[in-house]
Image 1 (tube, rainbow, N blue to C red):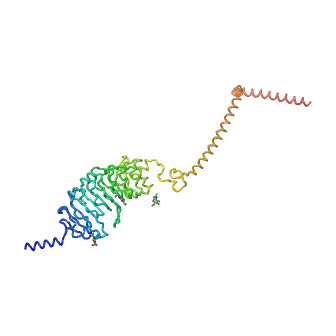
Image 2: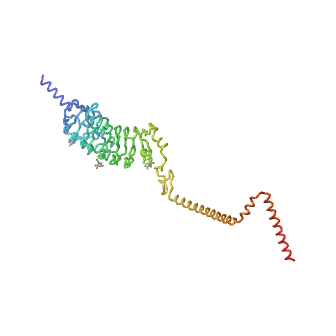
Image 3: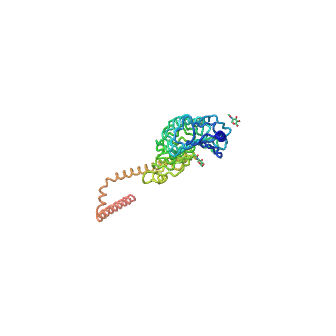
Amino acid sequence: MLLSVSVVLLSICIVRGDPVGCTYYESDLEYECTARSWVLPLALSDFNHVPQSLSMIDVNGDLPTATFSGFDVINTTLFDVNFVPTFTIRCYTSGILMYHAGTFTGLGYFKEVHIQNCEVIAMPDAALQDFGDLNYFGLENGVIGDIGYDAFKGLNVHTMTVPRPLGTFKLTSKLDSRVIPNGVLYALANVTNFVIDGANVDTLQADMFQAATKLRHLSLKNNLFTSLHSSMISNMKGLLTLSLDGIEWECTCDNLWFLDYCRTNNISLHGPVICGSPSSYINKRAYLYKTEQCPVEVLAIDPCEDNLPGIGVGTTCLTYLDQAVYLLNALSLSLVIATVLITIHTKRQEEEKDELEMKPNVEEESFRKLSGSRRNTVSAISTVEAEAAQARQEDDIVDSLL
Ligand SMILES: *[C@@H]1O[C@H](CO)[C@@H](O)[C@H](O)[C@H]1NC(C)=O
Ligand SMILES: *[C@@H]1O[C@H](CO)[C@@H](O)[C@H](O)[C@H]1NC(C)=O
Ligand SMILES: *[C@@H]1O[C@H](CO)[C@@H](O)[C@H](O)[C@H]1NC(C)=O
């Protein structure tokens, strides 16, 4: 009896063949192993099916260096190419996760890695490098304590030839420190899609994405920072989309530089950009602030792009040819003005001279000011005198004729 029970148990074990705590889901070619009952290490040789995808669930604690055994010899030629090999660690509600350099030995065949809902106490240096090339790496929900400077060393997240090419690095866990340590992202130089959403980030360094020259999409939604360094995205020459909603922007004309920058550089800006300050613009659109508060400067779009070389003035292009013509016009105008001024000046001078010559007749001037009757008398006298003179002249002429 005991023997037959043993035989039955033995045969079940042989048929099931899987590690304790691990269940196979054929439709997804995936194993799910629960921390509630697994016995570490998980040995590849214990799996009845190829663990093309593997989820470690209900995690709350330490994944020691010897968590996986023999995975480095997995035969990937048996994989179904329609399924991307995916590794997931999903923590039990508010469960903690600790891992170390060596925890993930042999797991380099996975192309996507998700760490979900975990309170990661610390991300040790070089502990993720066993994953090597990845199409996707995500720290999703949960909380992150300390991030080592070399936490992502050896991880090469890039767009891979898989059914859904991504090249995505996603961080939606809340950072205890509210900052991604300077230089930590330099190891992720081949990422095409950075998603750092709802991560409690309140400080962005100007050069944090400096190495990410292949970036196409950047999402920084729902964080605590209130402005963006202008040099932060200026080296992302291939950037196509920038998602910035859920930020309480400190609206100033300087801080809103990116509105013009995105338009000029064909970067589509996703999500409403809403002011968190000043108080008169709280919950109002940054575009409104800009329209009402910021003087229209030289447009970032170069109006001379399709013209002869020149200088952009507002929306029009002042070509060098135009400028030369304007200069000539200005010159001739100033010549005309100069001539007119000189003429006026000369005329003035002549008039002044005349006035000076008339000065001796001050008496006559005072005569004019005499009362009307007296004046008339005076002019009457002079008329009489003139007539007398004329008569004398005529007499002289007559005399000479005689
Ligand atoms: C992997 O599996 C294929 C198909 O079964 C086989 O031909 C190949 O020899 C295996 N490779 C290794 C390294 O075991
Ligand atoms: C980026 O990809 C190139 C190959 O395209 C590789 O040589 C380089 O090591 C990768 N960089 C990182 C930081 O993984
Ligand atoms: C911006 O995008 C438009 C429409 O796709 C395109 O016609 C234009 O050439 C682009 N400009 C630049 C500077 O890339």
